[in-house]
Image 1 (cartoon, protein in one colour):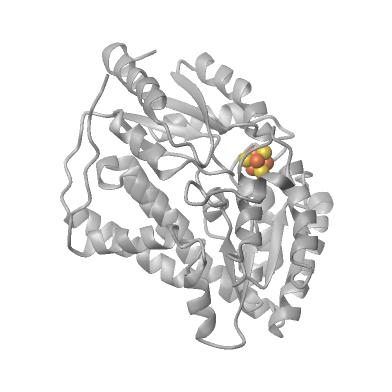
Image 2: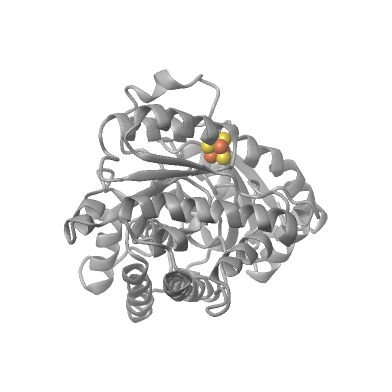
Length: 399
Ligand code: SF4
């Protein structure tokens, strides 16, 4: 089994400092960063959103900070969260409830729950009761990818979010404000695309754990601060002159909602895998390319969602292109193999998995699968499985 160790970040220096800052944000379950941001101006508001995607530009244009809620990971003990749900569903909603009832989400003034599965839908209903003094919106994302049908419906949804957040901030979402927000998020898209390109080209410069921490930081920081962080990271990482290891190149799919613990990513790297592409924190790059910055900004967001967003299990693919998409993407990033991972009991991810596995096998791309929970603590089995996968590919080019 491969025992290649990932490059450790420097113990000191600008790269270590930046990774340390991203780690502190990842661990900031009390949302201190959000409270600090709000303390800068009494009129500031913050809106939490659940996976996978919400149009952050609209929230931002209404003068609020969009804040991603990704659950408690392996950092909190579930005391009351379990009593809200039956046992045979994923872990994420339990830890989100735990965060709410323990007061850790108090810095947030409202919540958006995008349609992704029944679990999130039920969670939005619970928040209406648990946080009755706050604005709670269930965002029905269109599953009709036609401008006149789904597009018209989505325009109405965007307007509802705009008026809901504006009511909290007192700031109207004008076309001009929305264009300015799109410009800021476009800068962020460009920075994240450059980071992804660097990772594909030289994965030893962008370890999976650091890439992941940077994505998570985007869910707490204002967009311009996060863009600066990503650009600083790329500069410092290139300067760090890390060496390439004898690892295989792996693409990960299935982790678009409940996130794997950081230790699991570390385990995959230690098992000899460079992660060159994944769907972690997918909402941070759901529309990967910049949107038009002139013309109707609402239409830019609508077309971005309908025609430019990434394929994922939470989108019903009427043209059934997910199989072709995963094969094309694996080839684009020169993946030696694909890890199809999924949170336990995640219906959307597990329903897609056999179809994706079949497409990969047909294309001759090795894949393997396993399940996790956000608080998984034992990684030995996963390490052995990923290590064997990596070794088989190194030895025979297949599994
Ligand atoms: S992990 Fe899966 S089942 Fe659970 S809330 Fe997310 S999409 Fe729904």
